[in-house]
Image (tube, rainbow, N blue to C red):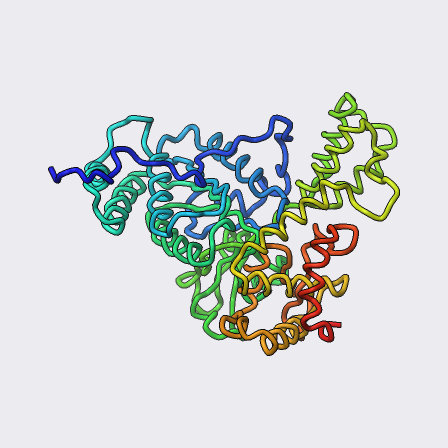
Length: 461
């Protein structure tokens, strides 16, 4: 046996940012997202585990992605309880990562591996015992990770498939995201099926995929489809079928079924924003009213809060209802929002400001551009803002954004791309949950955004 290194670890030290579980608040509505997400075709298909694509659920800051992930873990474990060969593992990244990329990757793989063991303290395989020996002996992180990766592959290959729910992806910097993406790509080859929550969806060109199954099918803007990979090489000849038409035996008129594939590695799905049932339930709970009986004069308040479409902001309003035991707090007179809502947005801007200076400044300039008009700004106008800033600020010119994705990632969910303009391809808007105006931000945050907007104030108007 190799000699022990005094710095080697006899037992794995947990990473404080990575957690196996997320405890739901006791007042959470258990049927939250039932109809709009858990009964959707996309989630149902992914959860069966026989598709290789991963499911990316994206949404605004505070919209409830962590809550959805925690409920998803519960639902998946209930669905797979009859099968001991389909484990459900979960990882919640609840803090910004402060360790090196190598240490994070080792901790990530270790956390997944430990959840695949039949029970705590159960016998491990020879690969993992080699990893433990390498850790005690102070072997290099590269060697430890390579051995741990082999041990994880051995566990995954022994399963029918494994379902992973990963929350907190946005806590990772760009380099860590690239590293983790590559690792997850390899793990998918070992039947790991991934549900990932994120503020910013994986960037892709807007494509409208409609079903070519014939005049009797009207499926359009498909998330899930079978495409003929031969015909797809020529955009004018592209052929696709929806699930229903494929199940009916329809096929490509030129190549039959031989080349029909789900030719994508992930599916982006926007976060469900239908909160009316949850808001009704919480208000009934507040006033002690039976579920079948509506609260008096509550429709206006329910409509207002549900239309926000963001569970964190909705809960902040509902907290004020509980505190005052009155619905009047929802429509208090005055031109400012409740302090807790303003504080939420301010905290988001403060987190952006902690990024490297060039990324923080790019983010705030993009938010300023998006806030310049109520309906956002076009990609062309945003380019003008950025070009002017790069000409004035040399430190930005040394590390300019190389794509729209770079800007969206730096802004961390506070702006998004919306493919509604056929000429510009995309327009950039501020997040629907945080309309950036005097009512939503403190004076300090307003000054920060205004200062960055003044860098190129003649543009985007």
